[in-house]
Amino acid sequence: MTTNAGKTGSNKMSIQEYTRRSFVKTACLSAAALTMPESLSAVQTGKNTPKKPNVLFIPVDDLRTQLGCYGHSQMLSPTIDSLASDGVLFARSYCQVPVCGASRASLLTGVRPTRHRFIDYYAKADEDLPGALSLPKHFKNNGYHTISNGKVFHHRNDIVESWSETPWGPKSKGSWRNYQFEENKILDAREDTRGPAYEAADVPDNAYFDGQIADKTISDIRRCKDMGKPFFIAAGFMKPHLPFNAPLKYWELYKRENIDLADNPFRPKGAPDASLHNWGELRHYYNIPKEGPLPDDMARTLIHGYYACVSCTDAQIGRILKELDRLSLSDNTVVVLWGDHGWQLGEHGLWCKHCNFETSLHSPLIVKSPWIKGGKKTTALTEFVDIYPSLCELCGLTVPGYLEGTSFVPLIKNPDRLWKKAAFSRYIKGDSIRTNRYRYTEWTRDESVPGAPLKLTQYARMLYDHNLDPNENVNISELPDNRELVTQLSKMLKGGWKAVRI
Ligand SMILES: [Ca+2]
Image (spheres, protein in one colour):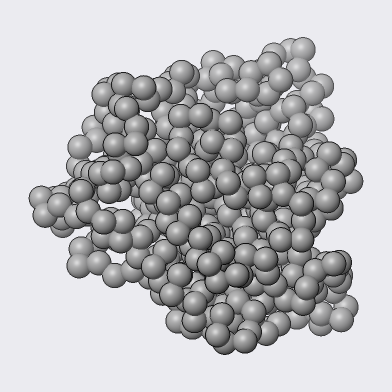
C-alpha cells in the first residue's frame, strides 16, 4: 500500500531475485532453527498469569511517537494516552525497517532483517522466510482463536495459516485510498496520478476504513467471548498512512494556525546523500509538487491531516477498548499497540519514512497487561523483534528458539534495570544503531565475488549525538575528534544484536 521511494520496477525484480538467491545461503540455518522442536527451544513462562489470557494486538500504520503520552501536547490521542497510563510505555522503541512490509514481516516472525531479507514494502514473510512460525500462528497452535482485521501483515495473503479465519479487510468501491468525495475518486482513478494527499469529509467514522475495522473487531470480540477459547485478535488500523483522509470532525479538533511546522526542515549539516530521498510516496498524490520543498501552507495542511487521522484512529481504538470493558474482558486481555515505523513530517526536508533518521525509526510501543501495575515508562532501548518473545512470556507460551529478539517482560517489572546497549535498524544499504547517546548509520556496497568471503565497502556514514543534538541536525561522523568513537560504534554495529545484550 505504500510506494517504494526511489525504486524502479527493474530494481524490484533484481532485488527480489537476489533475495531468493541469497535466502538459499541462510535457508539451512533458518530451516534448522525453524524446525527445532519446542522442547529443545528456550522456554520462558509467565508467572502469576492466568492460563492463556486473550491478546488484542493493535498495529497502527505509520504512527510516529507524536502522541500525548510521548510528550507531544499538540496531538489529541486520549485513548492511547490512557492505555499508556494503564500499561507500560516504551519510550525508546525502534522498528527494524522503516517501511510497512519489511517492518511487519520482521516483527511478526520475530526475525531481523538482513541485506537480503525483509528489505522493502514488497517484503513477504512467507517468501523471505519460508516455514516461519509467525507470532499469530504460534498462538493458534497453542489453542488460540486468531483473527486478522485490516492491515496486519502488509500482504493479507502472507502466512495465511496464521489465522483461524480468512484475514479480513474493509472493502471499497474505489481504491485502498478510500476517498469519499466523488471528485477525489475520479482523480484517483486516473493513470497519471493518485487522488489528493488528504480529504476531510463530513461522514460517520465507519465511512472510512478504520471505523469499519473497529466495527468488525468489536463484533469479533463479542463472538469470541462465547467461543470458550482464548483469542488473539489483531486490529490493524490503516491510518495515519497517506492519504490523510479522516472525517471532518477530527480535522476540526485542531486550529490550523496552532499547528507547528518542523523546526528543522533542512538537510542536516554534513549529512550524506545516502541519508535523503525525494519522498516519492507522497509525490504520487495529485496536489503535491514533483520536486522541491513543500510550501508552508501545504506542509501545515498535511500535518493537520496527519493529526486528524491519528485522532480518528485513536477514537476507533477507544471504541474497541470500551467494548472489552463492557464485556468484562479487560481483566483477562493483554493489549499491545505499536506503530510499524516512524514518519517524517518535514524534518530534514523529508516526508514519509524510508530513511535512517530517528524520526523514521523511533516508533510507539505500549503494552498493557492486567497483571502488571500500569503507569510505568521505560527509557531502555527496545526493538520490535522483542514483541514476539515478550507476548509469549506474558501469555505463558514457549518461546521458539530461533527468535532474534529479547523478551522485555523483565523491563515491565523493573523499567529502570540495565538493558541492551543498542537497537538495530536498517533500510536498503544503510545499517543503523541507536545507543543510549548516539545514532550511528553506515551505508555499504556489496563487492563480494562468488566463492569469496563477504566484502562490504562503506561509502557513507552519519553520527548524531542525542545528548547535544536530539533532532539530528549536525552529522559529526567526520570530525577528527570523533574518529575513535566512530570506530567503536562501527564495531558495535558490525558485532550484531547478540553482542549488546546485558
Ligand atoms: Ca507503515
